Length: 176
Image 1 (cartoon, rainbow, N blue to C red):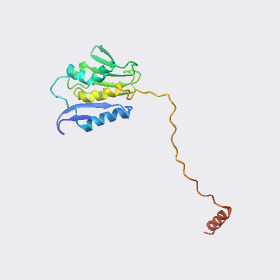
Image 2: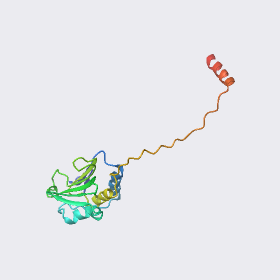
Image 3: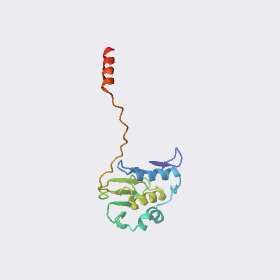
Image 4: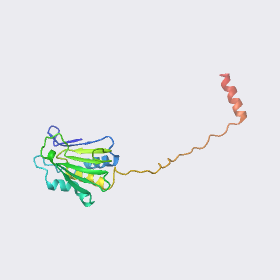
C-alpha cells in the first residue's frame, strides 16, 4: 500500500504486509485509511523523537521492553513473541529502500510469523493504531484448545415411500 499527495506526485509513504498478517491487524489498517485521519506526514520534515514517541506510545504504556542495538530501537512484549523495530539509519535517508518500521509477531524478529514493514513517512497515528493492536494481543494469540464444533442444521426427512407407491413408480418409469 502506498500514499500519494496527488495522483501524479511522488510517493509519500508505503507499507507492506506479509500474506500471513492476521485479518484483525489488516482491518485496523484499512479502518484507519478509510477514516482518512492521521495524515500527519510531513514530506520535508525529519523523523524526530516526537514522531517515534507518538508511534510507540501504546508499547510504552504497556511496559514493553525497550532496547537500543546499534541503529535499531526495539520494543518487545514480555513473552518476546511480538515487537516493533525502528531503524534509525533508514530514517536518515528519505529515499532508502530499507524499512524504517517493522511490526512483527512470531518466535523472533528473525523468524516472524507475520510482519508489516513501513517507510519513513508512515503516519505516526497509523503506527500507533497498529502497535495498540499488538499490545492487546491481536495476531499473537495461540490457542491449543480443540476447535469448536460447527453447528449443523438438520432438515426434516422426506416422507417414506410405501411399497405400493414404489411399485407404481417403478412400473411407470419402465414404461417410458
